Amino acid sequence: MGVESQASAWSTLTGRALPQDPGRPARWERVTDACEPGKISELFGAAPGDREVRRRLRLTLDPYVRLAGREVWTEWKARAAELSRPSLPILCGIVDPAEREREWQQRLSAEGALGPVWADVFAVRDEAARRAGADDHPTLAAATHPEPPAGISSAFEREALEPLDRQIARAARERVARALQEIPDAGEPGSWGALWSLADHRDRFDERRTASTLDALHRGLGLARRPGRLEVARGTGWWSTPFDLLEGGAGLALGRCPGPGGLRRSLQAFGIARRGAFLEAVRGLSGLSGLDPALRTATGVVTRRLIQNQSFLEWAGIPADEGLLADLRFEESLAPRLRWAYLQLGWMPPAASGDTGEAQRIRTRATAREASPRRVEGRPEGDVEDARHLVGEALGALYEERLLRRHGSRWFLDREAGRTLEAIWDAESELCEAADVSRELDLGRIDFAPILDRFRP
Image (tube, rainbow, N blue to C red):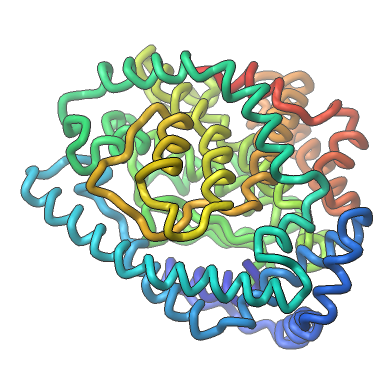
């Protein structure tokens, strides 16, 4: 997402406009000047063997595709906005079944209206890719990757998915058995949503404390006085949303999801946004542009996994019994598996993305949760870029291991740990791809062994 679209999304979520940056039009013009089919085609042909070319293609590919179909993207944004509001009855299951049913039907209607627009988006993306010399958009997007997405998927399936399939299935059954009675029965609208949002634990953490908790974390790591402005505002969305390319800094729109589930996602968004603030302050806009998406994901993994840290839970004042700890472990174990599922779904055409057939098999294997048979979405849930997010999950586990070894389980209150994070971010900006960063920082080869070790239910 470019500067322009991030600024627009920030205003929509928070109701707060950003101050005008006189340098923005010139920066945007430099990017859009490179968004011509001939220039994209030249990068596409050279990308497989050249890191700097891949970075330039990552920088220009998204605006190129969006400029190729402005009207389609505008309609998609309008339709998608109807799905962005918090769906409390569905996600929390805290009202009567009749009201929950009405809410569910409204959401299904909004998703149905979005389906045809998604088909138009796919057509526009593929046509733009063909003008640049690629067979389709997934092929063009894959040229920005250091490794083939199919290889990443196969390696994850072999090394980390299949070995845990049975444990995940057993943990899913146990999760349902542990859930409090307020969670709707399996198959009723909102049952799984209530589980993955940890709605049955929502009373353990008041979401109104999220801002002060993140502020204390910011200061504990010593990052509040370090380079980079981080704008934090109350948002209207269900989950907290990071913005790392705002004008003159970065932003965090806080979500409304209650409990440890909401805090977990807020921690992830905080890490991503704070990394963005630092890199923009130290390196300028170019310090963030065109970087391997795995790097952005990795920092989010580090801060998200604080919710697994008992020292953090005690510090944040979250009462943690064995039931909550087991539920947190289970939801975290699904994170990389969902990345894998989104990668599989990202290769499918829109007509095959509903909850039937192969798409249903993929979702069920990833989470051991069957989607409601009444829900058939006419849109994909992933993209080939999810291969990089999957690598980012593994890299994030390596980052976390370094922080724990150097600074202990309470690293989140250690200013030196904040400097360790800044050193990682600085290396990311310089080297721009995950494998090079891992090698330079002596973290070892990125594979999925850490996933198998650290993401067990």
